[in-house]
Every structure is written in C-alpha cells, then in structure tokens.
Length: 298
Ligand code: UTP
Image 1 (cartoon, rainbow, N blue to C red):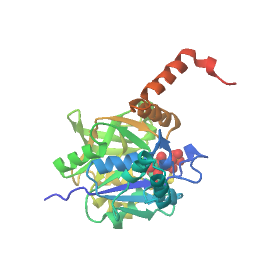
Image 2: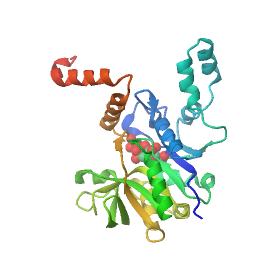
Image 3: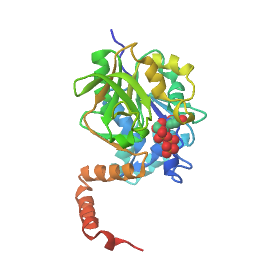
Image 4: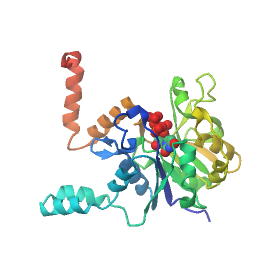
C-alpha cells in the first residue's frame, strides 16, 4: 500500500530582496493579496487537498507567521464583545487544529534545497508536499491536490509545470521531457535556471511539488549549485530514473507573487473574482485604461 501524502512543507525563509523594504522585518509570504496573506492562500490550498500537517521552515520574521496562525485571545474577545461577528468569524474560521502546525528554523537562507532539508525530521519517511507561497495558483481543484492525484496514480514524484516564454527560462527549473501525453510529461532531466539557448524545453517548474522522502538523503550531501545556493532542482535531478517522476501541466492560473508585476496582477485577478469587490475594481481598471496618463498625479 502506498503511503498517503499527509504533510506539507512551506519554505518561508527566503530574503525576499525584490520586495524590500516591505520584507525587511517580515517574510514576503505575509504580503496580502487583497486582504489575505500569501501564506494563508497556500495553507488553505493544502488543507483543501487533504493535508493534515503543516510544517513552516522559517527564517527572519518567524513570529508574524506564528502569530497569524495562532489563537489571538485579545482580538477575538474584543470582536465578540463588540458584536463584530463577521470579523470574528474571519479570524476563528482560519484556526488550525492544535498540534497540526510545526515550525523549524532554516538558520541561514542557503537556498530552497537547504530549506526543504531542514524539515527532514518533521517529515520522516513518507511522501510529502512542498508549497512555495509566493506562487499563488487560482484553480478549481487545489493545484497541490492535482499533484497528489498524480502521486496516487504513479507512486512517484510529481511537479507542477507550465510553459514559459523561452526568454524567461533563467528564472526557473526547466524540464528535459521524455514521453508526454500533453498533460503529464515524464521527466528525463532537470536544469536550474538555464540560459534560453541552453534550455532543454520551455516547460518549467512552479512552486508546487510532491516528493518521495529519498530527497532528504540526497540533500544531506548536496553542494551549492546555481547562485551559490543549495538547489532543490539539483537534488531532484539525482532522483530521476529511481522512481516515476512527472511534470503535470496543472489546471489553473499561476501568479508569480515574488515579482512586483506578478503580485499586482494577482491582486487584480483575485479582487475581480470577489463578489464584494469585483464590480468596483473592474470600474477602476476601465477608468485607468480610458484616461491613462491623465490620471498621473505628477
Ligand atoms: P526565491 O528564489 O523567490 O528567493 O525563493 P527569495 O529570497 O524568497 O526572494 P528574492 O528573490 O530575494 O526576492 C523561492 C522560495 O524559496 C524560499 C522562499 O521563501 C520562497 O518561497 N526560500 C528560498 C527559503 O525558504 N529559503 C532559502 O534559503 C531560499
């Protein structure tokens, strides 16, 4: 019997340099899209896919994430006493079960592979999910749930992938593709941040993974790779051929919220979907589009 995917790792220990100064004292995963921090979208995605245990690998600003997912007696009591029951519901509905959230420190931002390795004792000997909250996915079925389905089918590793413009391959881990049915692509090779001319394809990995625990043994001895960081892609490349390894062209729309324009696009897209905001935001967009430069303040 295959072990089920029960645990998810959320690496939140990056420096977030592209969002300084906002990320000086808090992780970029606490940046809100409309009114919810990125990390909460990712946790809700994992929970909707049946994940039971949440593991945060933190760096600086750990306390803001801990506090966010914790009981806030003072706030909840005040909201209740003032009869603000809608707001009270917002903060109580997101509470996780006691004991279902764990934190571990990465200690130094040595790369994504290093962050995942830091969670090894909490994950143990079972398949697990990884979600990078700065990749926000809008979809009907949770993106990580789509990968868990692939694992349940194949018993192997599964990555969420999408085609990117060739000039952007230097931002991603890129696949060398074997057999491919247009949805599920067998992975023959993986290269971290290749130059456009060297990229084996344009099919690129986004921040959703389901991996077998063998990755920890490889990460244990993993040296530094691209950018002087311990790369998860390099460790995954060493797992190829040992167990099934697939890239899934997931159903949904991904927003790169580690990038300013991607973050703004996510804010617009999520606001447009909201019944309480969509119409006003659409009006705002139309307004800006029609008068454009005339709106400039200076
Ligand atoms: P990024 O490559 O986006 O790096 O990390 P970053 O430091 O977060 O952001 P910039 O590029 O400086 O603006 C991808 C993911 O890996 C996590 C990040 O938190 C993010 O979710 N990460 C990265 C870690 O947890 N630890 C690391 O050492 C590096």
